Length: 207
Image 1 (cartoon, rainbow, N blue to C red):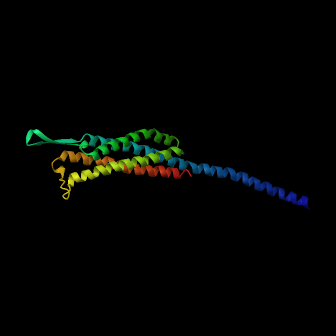
Image 2 (image 1 turned 90 degrees about the horizontal axis):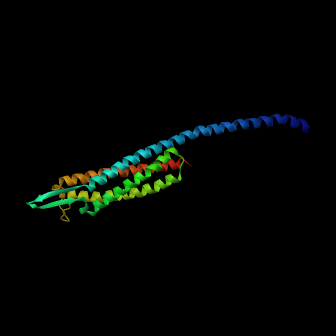
Image 3 (image 1 turned 120 degrees about the horizontal axis):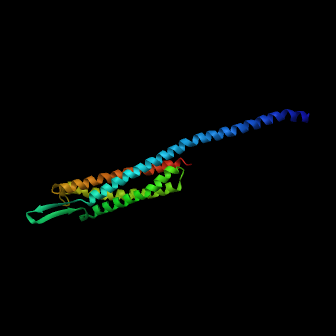
């Protein structure tokens, strides 16, 4: 009886094992088919990351140059007396130039790492490092832009309570340049936020 049971069960065991062997390659093929979209998305994020960094370099560099080369001279009654306005007359504008210059230099140094992520889309440690430094540069750029914005506002509007008059009524060219310098800096802030978010999304897809 036992011998007959073994004879009957043997084909069933062989059939089950054959099904398992077939299921294994199918699961492996499904996993391999699912992997490329994730890899392709991470590579796309890395390419966009590189493009945004290049744009941010031009934005912060333009802001630093525009602010650092701003000056205007106004004659006063006689040719021997004049008023001159320069960016380094105000510490906030000097800090703005330094902050944008530092961030621009950092962005240039981060380009090789961004290119590396295009080739190695599964890299994680380097992305964490980029997020850390991107966040620090975002804070620095925000501080510089905010400090300069406060002074630009006072230059345009003045403050009657503190008896600060609006210097932009006299120094028109100076105010136009310092106002325009803020555009690239605030654009860089927005791009840094996008860079940090994209790196976080890429890291979350590695889990």
